[in-house]
Image 1 (cartoon, chains in turn green, brown):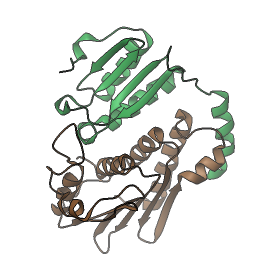
Image 2: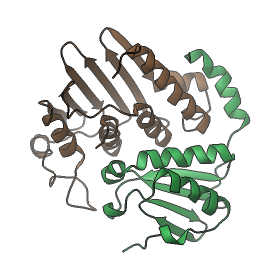
Image 3: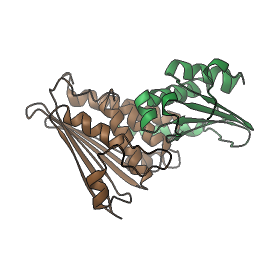
Length: 119
Length: 184
């Protein structure tokens, strides 16, 4: 059973694997988490992205949440920003989110068929 | 929404949007009284009396990107569908309390769902938030206090993936013990 007594050990473990979040060189992933996003399943998309990043030991990815951006019918949406390049994916589910991390975040391969254009 | 925990996530996002530095989530389940009660309290900027009266209307919102704000209306409708209700108490400059209750056994009462995911989503995005989650089932209570966890972690952020993973399991185990093997 977990208890607060675990925190000392957890702290040490986490410190050993501290991730550097370099805003410039690294990748930024933004997940829509407004009412529309939440209703469409964004919470589980975010969880899948965090899990995939953790599993792959990626240390230069920053994941943040945003509110509704006004394209509710496309939610859940995930934006991947690498330097000057911004790509917006729409109708993302947990499985697609993992592939986005694997292919786009890690290998810089945009998955064209899932991309939506901003109005 | 498919799970009550998704409504909860939505409302807590409202609290944060309103500038809250402290949010409390209290869930009380009483199978004997057949009640499922959720109370979300924050110390954000609060609402005017006019806002409190009209906010259940989906066309009343503080948002500027759209003319609809569905968070409270959806939660309100969900509660009414089970014979419950949603009440708002708010004071400008002090904060807001949203109290929702459902008839627990009603067939249209959505399951609580993955509340651990809701909590880790909140804390992952806002690791310094004052957050307390208290869940009562019959005469047993499970509680999580973000401040206690931060104290134990010292300079490690709550948003660290390892920490979020621990919090997730801590909640899942705590709730399993809370329900004591009884089905939700």
